[in-house]
Length: 206
Image (cartoon, rainbow, N blue to C red; front, top):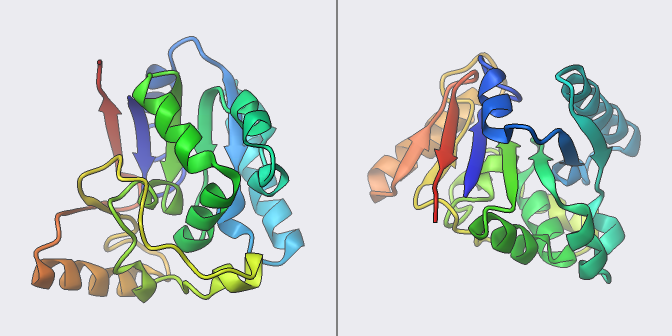
C-alpha cells in the first residue's frame, strides 16, 4: 500500500510523490470533494490541480465519480497509476466514493499495491477510521446539496488514526482545526495533525 497524504496539495517537497510513484506517470484526478461548490468554482479548482500536476510531468485526466454511480466496472478501469484526490469537504467526498463504489475499488487496489493514492486535506481525511470531529470544520449537510442524501460518518479505515490537516497553518480553517484536536485529545482519539507543507508517506509491502 502506497499513500501520499498531504495537508496542502503537493507539500513542501513534491519529489516525495515522484519517488513514491516511481516510473508511473499516469494520474487520475478526483475532484468530488468540491461537488457542493458552484460548478464554475469546482471546474477552476480542479483545473488548477491538473495544471500543477502536468507541470510535474504527469499525464493527467479527471475522473468524476458522479459519472460512475451505476458503473463501478467502468470506474475500476479508470483508476490506475496514481490516483490524486484533492481537498474540499470530506463528507461530500466520502459519499461520492460510496455512491460510485470508489471506496471499495480503491481499498482493493491499495491492498494489492496496484495504485499510488495521493490525497490532500479531505482527500486524506477520508482514509481515517471515521469522520467524527470534522463537522467542526466542514458541514455534513453539504451532501444534501450535492446529492440529496445524508452524510456518511465512516471512513475507509486505511489509517488507524484520524488525519487532521491545516493544523496551526495560515488558512481560514486553522481555528476550527484547533477545536478538532482539542476534542480528539479530550476523547482519547488517535490522530496525526499536520501543518500545511507536511506530508505522510506510507509504503507498505505485502
